[in-house]
Length: 103
Image 1 (cartoon, one colour):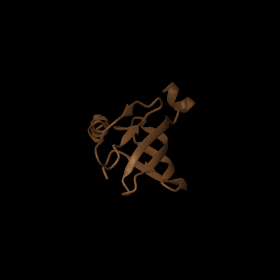
Image 2 (cartoon, one colour):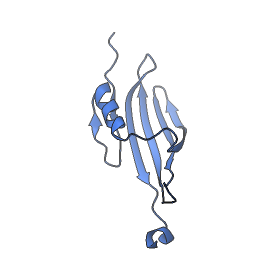
Image 3 (tube, helix red, strand yellow):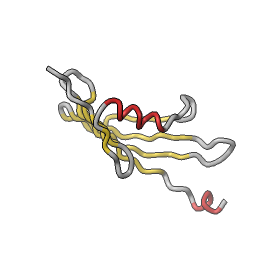
Image 4 (tube, one colour):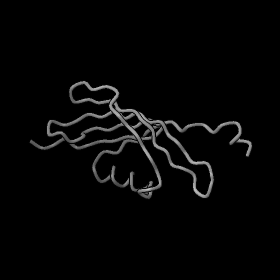
């Protein structure tokens, strides 16, 4: 049996990537250094082969600047062999505070 072709979406209005190569290329466009971010995610709901995970990603500011923090929701569906067959990411950026906007 041929494994399913994975698909992935990401962003506030997510584009769709239809194969492994397109997914890898899209993720490599955002080349974040290994120590330049922190993240925490955990399952929110599990139903058979479908999972909803939520969490955050934090990209601290460089040279004292304001960083960016994102809140994420991942929708995943797994193939019978355990590999992720479908991945959708929804995110929103934490807004700047009034103090940060005026500086």
